[in-house]
Image 1: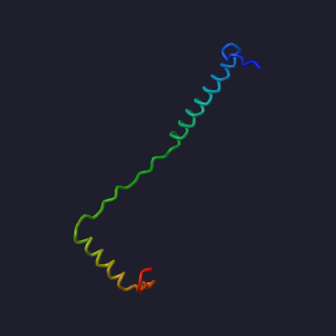
Image 2: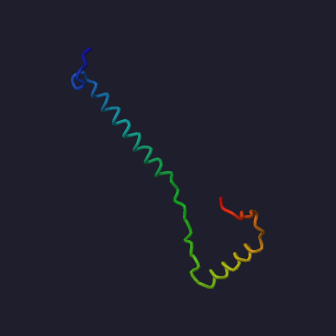
Image 3: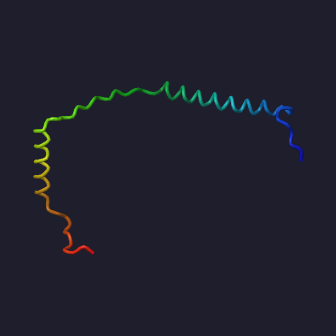
Length: 79
């Protein structure tokens, strides 16, 4: 079995054409994905940093937790 040199037999042209076609397809997909990409405007969220607001939220959470009955009862002993 003889292995032919691709530079002499003309196969190198096929390899180069395959490589170039893959690169061109990648470039076309990149252009298509950036061309049809719509930029969504995202509103900037501002978080309340005042201490009074966070304290009232914690108090409300505590009230809610105290009002709920526990669904599970812990065992007396850990096994």
